Image 1 (spheres, rainbow, N blue to C red):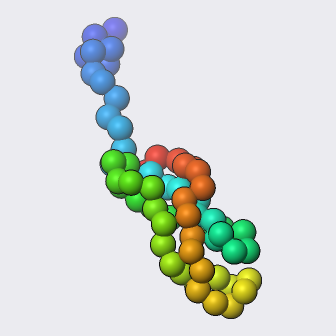
Image 2 (image 1 turned 60 degrees about the vertical axis):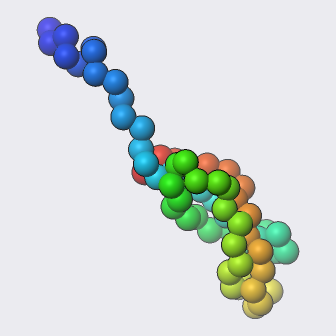
Length: 64
């Protein structure tokens, strides 16, 4: 048995994938952001209402 596998620490990913949700219609999409950055909030085109709307980070999906 190799003891180096036990002693090494697992490295965390630098980026995570988060789900962004429109505040107006509820439309969602996935975006990748740095792990240490603040939560995202951005303006993007919403296909349901055919206008730009504010999207806010809803939840973390996975590490990248």
